[in-house]
Structure formats: structure tokens, C-alpha cells
Length: 147
Image (cartoon, rainbow, N blue to C red; front, side, top):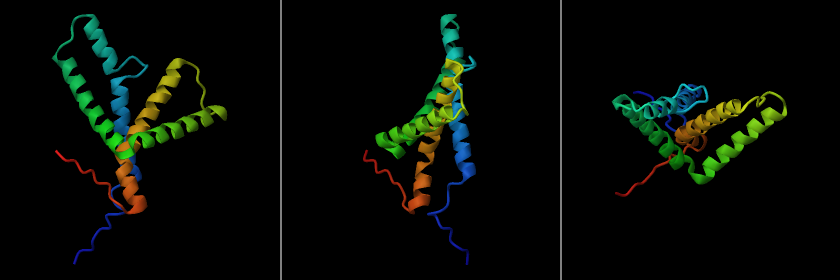
């Protein structure tokens, strides 16, 4: 007879969180980054040159779908309080890193990069939260939606 898997401790690993963080980071940085190589720059340039076409619209649609998945999952998992606490904790960590000299804000661009990585971190925590919660407490998060 096969041994049953303990579902209260399965589902989230460091590698799983890292993949979620990388996916969130790709979404955030593809949407906008101060390096000038992002969907924002490509689309606004095309609009300015009157060359906006179906590939631009497809990219916008795919990015909006990605944002919808990450944003809805994060908001449902963490709620207003959780998102606020995640931002507060990340802000405190960043401040501490500046305070002890590990980070330096040489330019607005540097601060923007840090903010974008923090945004990706909040999204990654949001899409991973149910797994963390189940691992810590053994309880499942269930969303009841009445249509």
C-alpha cells in the first residue's frame, strides 16, 4: 500500500518560491524598467510614431493577463493588511540596507530598480502565501465565490 503524502507540509519549497519570484520579476521588468527596454517603452514609442500594431496589442494583453493573475492572487491571499505589512517590511529592510551602507541610491534609476524588485517580491509572496500558510498552520485557504 502506498504511503499517503502529508498535504499540510507539501507544495512549497524554496525552489518553488524562487520560480514564483522570478516569474513576478519577469512580469514587472517586462512591463517597465528604467533601462528603457520594456513594453512601456516599446508601446509608447509605437504610439508616438503612429506604428502601434497587433504585436503591441498582443503584448499588452498578455501582460495584462499576467498582472491580473498575480494581482488577484496577491490581493486575495494577503488582503489590504497583508499587502501593507509586506510593503512595510520590505521598506524597513531596504532602509536598513541603506543605513548600514550595503545599498546606495546613486540615482533615481537605482531607487526605481529597487522598488521594482520589491514589487516583484510582494507579488511572489502573494502568490505563494497559501502554500506558506498551509505549511505553517496545516490549514487550507479556501475562497468561496458565489456566482
